[in-house]
Structures are given as structure tokens and as C-alpha cells.
Length: 422
Ligand code: UD1
Image 1 (cartoon, rainbow, N blue to C red):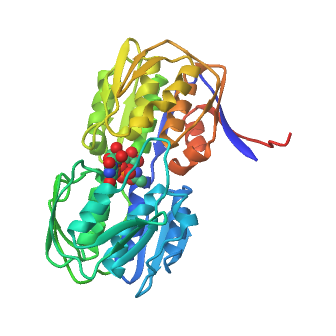
Image 2: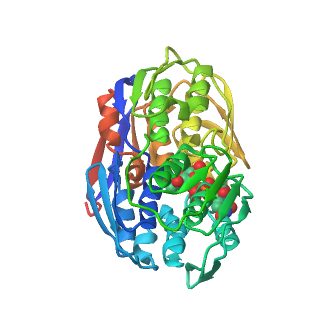
Image 3: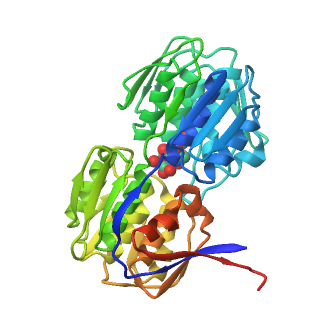
């Protein structure tokens, strides 16, 4: 059976939507559980495919993992296995984040390279260079990253670029290293802060949390903990863009609006009225959005994961927008699909120029990754007729209850299952 989403454009989205924990946090928190023997519980987990996939990765390392709705319980043995199973890892890019914890706990890690990705090349050179600075050897052997260390020692590490994954892997190795590690030019995404918070609860000593310099004073062991995942700012922002594009009014609950300061400011510039509360915000758009420029950058810059939503907004905005992609070079590939929906867009290297049209035109389109899929659905909400968005497994990997949430806001969308044999 294959599935697609059938979207009929024209509805204004109105109402409120609850957002659960961040995909880009929970997977790293699950890996961090490896750092302590015993039972760690993580709550507010999103019910998305990647969570059971990560559970399989941890099981392949000898952990007992239970996934029960929004709670994941991970029982870590005294000596976890050092070799992650290829079949589990290959399905999930984020599984490389077991590398740091395994080197720290087992002094040896064998993690298959997860392979290519539709959003561009995702090398691990900075992850490896950081682990080497801590005293590990790392090689690529038979398709796996193999890292080994007799002992790990604190070190000064300067990252070439504030990579989210490299910061996480180095951090999770450094917490059990002997001495003090300083990670300079570290990523400071809210999901990194969430990981630091959980590590601190486990007994790690980390200074500078939320800044681009993380100072880690290694400790000899950590304790298991219970932790609640922060709300998913990318999902929350997706609903905010949907409200702005459909000229609707949507309240998003369960996300810290400060994680979206820049995004909400952009939507204000586009003409939306935005009000913020403690863990919620409301976006109301009266009339057609105005064109706005977007530049993707590491946090607190505009998230590359929201670039497809920015293109979708620009496609229906009044005027011409320039969108610049600085993080993942291949992410503009999905713009061709937007053009199938009638978007007037042109890309040149890192830049896309989009001249807004009043209405897009429905078509069958292909979701090449999670965020591209969500952007195409938003575009479909502003297209005449029925847009079919195919390969929805991508969207299911990042957005829990995607169709149900949109329908509750008044969107005309359904999941359609087709038997390819017919
Ligand atoms: C994470 C997020 C992803 C988000 C991205 C950037 C998860 C599961 N995924 O991915 O959704 O789009 O952050 O916010 O959390 N790079 C290197 N060498 C390295 C590591 C990275 O050159 O060793 C480059 C990458 O090719 C890319 C850039 O650095 O151009 C950013 O990558 P990174 O921040 O590491 O992204 P991920 O952690 O893979």
C-alpha cells in the first residue's frame, strides 16, 4: 500500500494546536541515556516513526527499551554493546549520536555510516576531529565509524562550523572524560540546551549552556534520570506559517515562543499579528502576506528546517522574496516541486528568488524529506483544486498527527491509501 495526502486549498486555518516534544531533541536524549547504567525515562516524546527506530538502535546495543505513547523508558546495562546494528542505523540519520556516548561508556564504538540524505551531504569530519582531540582514534572501516580510546582527556576544541550533531557527540563524550573540555563555536540550538539540561540532571558538570562556548568538567560516572523533552519549535513554526499563508488565526501551545523569536518577527514583517504567552503564541493574518527575505543560519538564525515553509510563504506573498540557504546545499531541490504547484521561483546556488502569486495550482508532488513535505502541504493549502503530496512517510517521521492537526484547524486534507497493484 502507498499513501499520499490529498489537500484541497482554500480553507482559512482557525483554532489551536498542541505541539509535543521535539524530534531533534528526543533522539539525542535517548542516546544520552547510554551514559548511565540503569533506567532513564523520557516524557513528552513525539509519537513519530523515528522514536521506535532509535529504540531499535539502543536495543541493538543491549538496552531494554519500552515506548508507551509519549514516554520512553530505557534500561541501560552495566556494559552496553559497542556495535550498533546497520539495519537500525541506516534508517535513521540521527542514530550517529550514539557515537559519543559509546566512546565515553565503552571506550569503543562501531557505528555504521547512515548513508546519503536528500537535503545534502552530511559528513562526520567534525564529530571525528572532536573525538580525536579527546584522545580517541577514529577511522572509517567497512562502512562504519570505528572510534576507540584507552582513556578520554579534556581538550580545547574549536569547531569549524557550529554543527548540531558534532556538538552533541563531542559533548556526550566529554562529560565522562578526564579533565576539562572547552567546545568553542558550539551549536546553541534549544535542543542542545535540552540535552545539556538532561546531562546536568544526570550529574554532568557543564558551564556556558546556551552559549557558543561549552565548558565541560568531566566526571567519573553519571546517574540515570527522568526528563521531559522541550516542545518542537519546528513543528510549532510550521503551524505559524500555515496560519499566515491561509490568512487564518492559529494558537500554538507547548512551544517556548522565545525559541522562535526571529521566525515570529519575520511573520510580523509579513503582516501577521503575533501575540506570545508563556508556552504558547498566536499568529493571525488578515489579508495576503507581504514578501519577506529569509536567510538560514545556525540558531539563533532562521532554521534551515523551516526554509521550505519560507519558500511556501514567499510563493503566495505579495511581492518578491529572496531566500538564502547557508546550511544544507541540496535543500533547494524541492523548489522544483513547488514550481509544479505554480510557484514563480528561480534558484541560483545558495539563493532562491520567489515572486509571489495570488493562488497556486494543484498538482501531484513528491516529498523528498520531512520539511520539504510539510512545505508542499502548506503550498497545497493555497492551491486551487486537489494537490496530492506523495511519499508521506517522510512527513510522518517528523510530524505527529499531521493530518489530524490540520483537519482540526479546518484544513481540507486526508490521508489516502492506494493499492499500487490496482
Ligand atoms: C541537525 C538536525 C537537522 C537540522 C540541522 C541544522 C537532527 C536530528 N537533525 O542535523 O534537522 O537541519 O541540525 O540545524 O537534530 N557538517 C560538516 N561536518 C560535520 C558535521 C556537519 O561539514 O562533521 C556540515 C553539514 O554538512 C551541514 C552543516 O554542517 O552543512 C550543519 O550540519 P549539522 O548542524 O551537523 O546538522 P545535523 O546535526 O546533521
